[in-house]
Image (cartoon, rainbow over all chains, first blue to last red):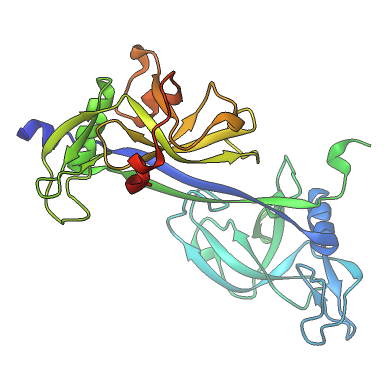
Length: 152
Length: 165
């Protein structure tokens, strides 16, 4: 084999992709349906705690959860991590924070993105409000991200 | 009520992996031959078996393979599967047949599509030929061969290909 042939080894991009479709059931289905209308809901357990996102069963007792309650839409950051180099599948194409956010009226925190611009704008305990997607589809990304409440 | 106001019953969660795929020296040569409309395998210097697509070595003997051998374009169906379930990204009329085809001169079959033949008529030992895309569309890819179709030749007896299943 000549050198120029071996130098011309082929290469091509290849994407392996599966579009998993999962049914969401009555409780998460309600959560996504409400998100489409720019509302956030959780589920109330028998001891009065509010879980967001809602769960079908109370994780501490195993009993069914059927009361759906509205929460937020604002909340408080309980923990966060700055993402300097977002990946293709991340919710934002510029540096952002992944944060655990406890919405007003909720007893659990939910993971989502905070578009703060700079890590110096992030702090545990800070108040955040949702930014909604203009083209809702019934997905967690109908809630495009959260942003700092101050300075809006 | 419009469809978008129905309750959400399911979500789509894509899983995607992106690669830069390189086939290596031997398979690059195989694909370059495909671009010229030829199916070229490699013969093992030790056991004399002919592999396509060439991988540059014999998996049985562990020796490098360099001798190139043109095979096909006709071949024999060794085994097959009738597909009756639709898939995303596969735009074929159901049912269709995917088969292992042993090209004339090769010792290992490969996977290909059978067309121009009812699924019920496909059988082990059936003789087939490659149907190529128009030459202007040829590239360094196996997709130059659109599919295989039956040819008017007697079936090959099972004894003659049972070593190649």
